Image (cartoon, rainbow, N blue to C red; front, side, top):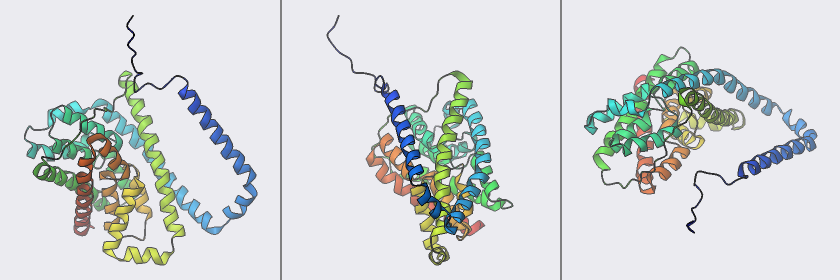
Length: 335
């Protein structure tokens, strides 16, 4: 028998690590519950404050309005993602990158995907010979213009079809413009290719339920966080500050663009948060809904890890600037 030892598989956790993690979680939850019991009297007096009641009302309203649709949207997205695949996209895309960029952008309508899935899928497409500009266009379009996102926007803005159209056009314009700019100016940017396919075993049924579980947990967590922050802005930030920011067109756009980048909401739920920011103009809300799916702090981190820091330093600012300009132009035109 050879004396050579082999390191454990990088994807395999050490024995017992799952049990230790679960035990730690149990202790954390129990510790939190005990702490709540000990400070409950102190909390009750403060939770009775009118501002807290207003915050909780806004928060619950946003979540209750969006969660039922989020469930339906996740189910629809899982059906489409299960029946279609990146292989379909490869057959659709022309070999000429200049023509492939708009085709990849429109393919986002038929091949929806969450932001975290689109990054490894784009890397996988590049590894199979798709031009980087085309794969990056799909990366930007898939989470932003698919039917789930457009219907959620229609639900969040009832009776406002122009908002849905503006979101579709601004997001598509962002994806295609970035693709063409990358094709023209970034030919020598070094890019890493780390293959991390977003794949689930277990056949069609297993893939469907894995997609549902992954997308719902991912989207619901960010929805709750975004609803909490939106409710806090509407409740605790002095109205005079909100009005002064929202009243300045440029400042309002830049503020909601930064908010979208930092909060990192899921594209299936961000329209409900945008609709709750009633003090801001429709154009500023559109910027929020276009910037978020295109580039946020989570995506920037993932893209840096997937394609390398040299890529991220160029790609992240390009996407942010293009998204803000595209959404502002479309908002000025349609809204």
